Amino acid sequence: MAHFSKLSSEQLTSCIAHLSTPLREQLTQFVLAADFEACLSKSQVDALLSHYPDNDTSAKHQLCRDLIPLAQSYSKAPISSFYVGAVAMGESGRIYFGANMEFKGMTLAQTVHAEQSVITNAWRHNETKLVMLAVSAPPCGHCRQFINELNGASDIDVLITEQPTTRFADILPMAFGPSDLGISDRLMNSPLNAISVESDDQFVKQTLQAAQQSYSPFSHSPSAIGLKTSQGTYFGRYAENCAYNPSLSPLQGALIALHLCGDDVTAIERAVLVEHQGSRVSQQKTTAQLLNLIAGASLETHLAK
Image: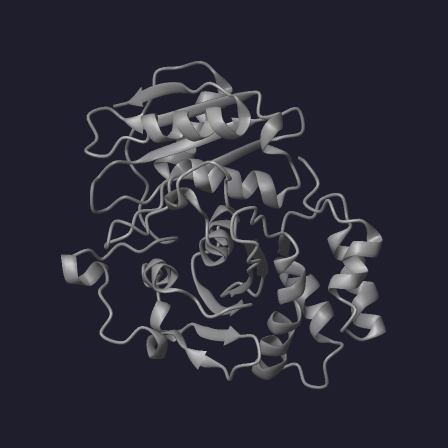
């Protein structure tokens, strides 16, 4: 697996210079470890919390806020030069990082927002519920709609730089969600899709597994992307939204994983799409176009039954 951070020790130090020396030293040890994947385990989070006066909810809030500059440093914004970082704490006690990603020369619709990034990161680490979300800038309407797809979204503590803590329900009044369409499934917490592909290729099988875990209760179009480089393999699951437009494509999900693991999109050697045969939504055309633009890579498509 590729190493998450491409930051040098000096760059990392500048991101966390505002922290106390003991906290800074321990965090540096965690982030520069070879197996760091944009996620802090519960034991690591507990170790970091020990440096705060009180190990309670307020300390967890402050830790998430303190980690925002670190998340922000992984922003890729060649179009806007607006660098957004997001930090989320899951019900498990783990902490996840995310940042916005833009693709120069591609439509703005392909942009990944920091909130989408951190949610996808938590989902790929098998988190099922978030309790805190810290962001360097107020979530836009697009992101608020995306967050609203989560289980227990209304109770998430939202922490915006230099603003008081608020509940998510307070920043999305009169919300439209899955329940309005009679859907009980939620992003990060939904049943597996019963689909299969006839293939002996292990990478295709892994991509199929990701497609089985994808979330598409509105169009019933499960899909996933697998990306392979010389450094590692990365998978993205389709994450649908009841309002449709904030949906996150499987390629965007895979690129989030690749980027947060410190790999390079230009190093993609193989790309595999698995989607359900006859789906009302197909990822094939837009995926192939974006892959060709950012990596010069071709796309293999395997139809599931």
